[in-house]
Every structure is written in C-alpha cells, then in structure tokens.
Length: 477
Image: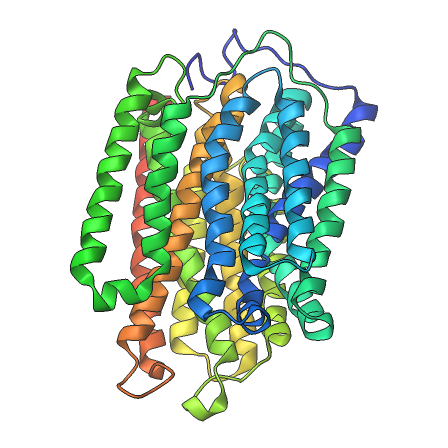
C-alpha cells in the first residue's frame, strides 16, 4: 500500500458510464452477499453434519473452521491480485473454485470431500475486498464511498441471511439440501460477475509473495486451530500456550518476509500507518466482541428449558433471531454514508462500538423473554452495521486507489481472526461456568461473558476516539 493518499494528483479515476454503473452496483452487492452467506453455511449445520456423517461434533466444527481458514489465507492473496490488471480473471476464477467446492458439498461423497468443498467455498470470502476495489475504480467518488460501505455491511449480515435458510433446508431435506442452496447461489454469482464486472484499469501489475503466503497460512492455521479447540486450553494448557507462541513467531517471521520483499503480500510499512494500524486494532478487538455476542445469543436461544433458562428453539427458529441483526445492520449501512458527511469516520466507529456495548448490556440485564433477545440482536446488528460501514473510510482515506483491495483484505484477515477468537472466548467463559456433571453452563456464565464483551467494546471505543483525535489534530495543525 504505497503511493499518495486518495485524492492526490497521482490517483486516476476510471469510472464506468452511468448506464453501466446501474447493473454494476447490484452485481457487486450480490457477489459479496453470496460469498458471505455461503462461507457461514457451516454454522447452523454442525450438528446435522455430525449426525449425517457419523463424526464427532469437534470434527464437524471443522466444516466452519476450514472455511474461515481458507478465507483468511485467500483474502490477502486475492487482495494482491486485485491490485493488478488481472482482477476480473481473479474474481471469475475464485467464483469458479467456490462453485466447484459447492458441488463437492452436495455430492454423496465421504466427509473428507465435504471438508475439501468447504475449504473451496471459504476461498470466496476473499472476494469482498476485490468488490470494493472494483467499486472504487469504476464508480464516481461520492457513489463509490456509499457502495463500499454497503459491501462491508453485506459481508457481515450475509451470515444472518444464510443461517435461517440453511437451517430450514437442513430440517426439510437434510444437510445435502442445505448445501445445495450454496451451489445454486454461487453459480448465480459466477454468472453475475461474468456479465457485470469490468476489467481493471490498464498500467497496473501485481505479484504474489508465495513465501509470505505460506508462512501466513501456517500462522493462521495455528490461530484458528487454537480458537476452535477449546478443550485444549482447559485440559492441556501448556501445549496450547506452546502452539500460541509458535503462531506468534510465525507471524513475526511473516512480517520480516514482507518487509524484505520487493512485492509483499501486504505492505507492512503502510499497515503501520497510525490510521491503518488503529483501524485494524479496532477491527480486531471489536470483532472479538461482536462475534462473542452473536454466539452468546444464538446459543442461549437454543438452550433447552431444562437448564433453568433458555428457550429450547430449533436451529431454524433460532436462526430467525438473526433477522433483526440483518435488517438493522443493513439500515445502519444505508444511513452511515449520509451521516459521515457530518461526522468523521473514526467517531462513527466509536459510536457504533458504544451501540454494540449497549447490546451486551441489554443481554446481560434482560434475557428472560424472547423479545428481549430479538431486541439485543437488533441493537447488535445496528452497531455492527454502522461499524462495518465506517471502517473502509478510515483505511481508504490514506490508501491509493490501486491498493484498495490489498488494504481492505488485510483488514478482513484481522476481522476473521477477531471473530474466531470471539467465538473461542465465549466458549471458554461458558465452559468455565459449567458445573461438574452438567451439560449446560450456569445462567450467570452468560452474564460474565457479556461483561467481557462490554470490556472489549470499551477498548474498541477508546481506540476509535484516539483515531478521531489524531485526525482532528492533523486537519487542524
């Protein structure tokens, strides 16, 4: 991510005609929504997969983890390819891989092939940053900012769209029927991209740092493995700590490789820019909190009445609890571009973090009625929507147009790791609150986890306010 900031004289605009821009915008939104929804398909299907394939729940959990892993690795690689002249080819090839993976999840093949298919589907998660790059290159500046914000929001609320649909199909036709939904929509996304996505502007080039990609993949594998294997932390703490140390060393090695490379996967020097570093820190900590509350609410809703709390909802009905999350998240995404003309993006990040913290407080104080869970999920969605819509503005304000995909791809890697850790932290807190011989944690464990989330969002708010103060001092020397 080198070069002058956006708005500098060296930045050239390549807008498409207005008649071409109309179909381009819904195409970008549709592709971003599809890859997000398909990547999250593993979440509601874990129990069904364990039953259908006669594997443990821990093994079935990998249908989600492997998609997150492949997405985290593919994102910076695709982000780098998106900075070059072969961006359209990279988008189409990636969607073809996702379609092939979707076919593997539908065919009557052994469990290993299902994991391979889920890994291929997860590669599509790296396309969100490329959709932003296309929007920034081919739409007028005022239009592109709003579209980029909505793409960011759609990439998160896609989970809320896919969850109830997949759960319903699993109940009606089994796990293969649910994965069949992924095959249909990814094929439609490939056709949409083929017809609508334009070529990248001329004069760009991009090379993939293979060594950096391999080391980053190894580090992320360890991070996501440690986030998913909660029993390892409780039963073999020394082993878990050792693996965590190895992951940190690998990340340090990766940073050194990137600093020495002439064509780095991610420009680490640019990532150290205070605005970018602060935004990524806010995304990391905020991601932990946001996903923590999402998992707490859905798990609480499905806990049977026999535990002394919970509502015993089926997977499909519990998925409907995500509807307020998706709807209000989209509303916030639509409102944010209008509000950001009056309020700086870092302040919007801080305000959104406060809203998410309010969702935690609401869940901690009132969850005895299902309507209260819907309310907490709606507050969470509105906060996450605003946060996601404001985030690109903070990073892209100091990023040249040609590096949009690469800059945002690193932010999404940070988000993926934060989400994984949020899920793991929630599981660890609830496991600590589960008494000997009990299947479910005490109700107080959910309150403890919610308070942890409040702390995470407080850190996110303070980080965002620090960014706002820095921007204010730079604009008013």
